[in-house]
Image 1: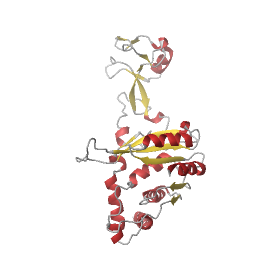
Image 2: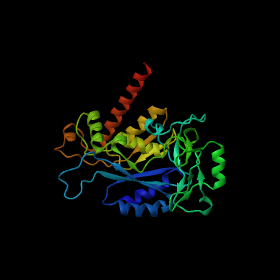
Image 3: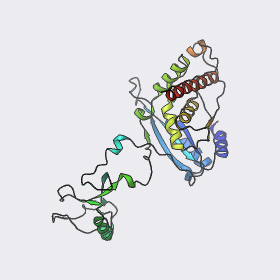
Image 4: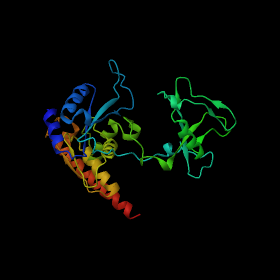
Length: 309
């Protein structure tokens, strides 16, 4: 079932496009092998971990599994540029300016490294006259010439007393990239959990319809990593409750984009005993379509409410 879909996905991806595939422990190893064949090992980006549960299941026979994986491959890795996350107050708080440097806030960076280089093994004398050697088995990350250049430019810090082990000053204004590098673990506090996803669907269509659908915040994070253009097309081969469509509409509302989505879902019949069936949803597609209608209306109303404030 997966192989032909993955081949089709590769064929229709843009050259700077990326695919995300959610899967659990049971088949993740097989999926990686198939994706390596279809997309090429060199186009593997990451195996993300999503913390989908916030509490252990006490009826688990061995281990309460709290995570799923999201496998990530690019069409052409050289042309793909990952979207970075907005900087947080917590991250910015790590930057301070204890010496009132006119270049602004900075954070200290360890000057020693494990990889030994004789050129970088030399003593450093602090402003107080203390002589410091690199830690045992390590050396400095800078050659003596590079160290002296940074020292002259006030980019080396010896602590408020001038007697501490030297560190390199990394300025917030000189970061190589805007935003923060995404991490491989996606915690539920940042991207939601499966119960949050179920609550979102239930609240929108006013009935319990899905067990463990993806939360909007998770798909919103993946859209950020995909670094979509404002007119991109997002395709979901296994639409389910149409969380992807909901996330795309939300992103468009946030940045004024005109992204379009294509949701693919077989009309799998709902259980006649289920709440969804009793509410009139005879198959999964009907649930997804109604969720899209209601989510779109809700987002439109929220936008109008903001514009009138």
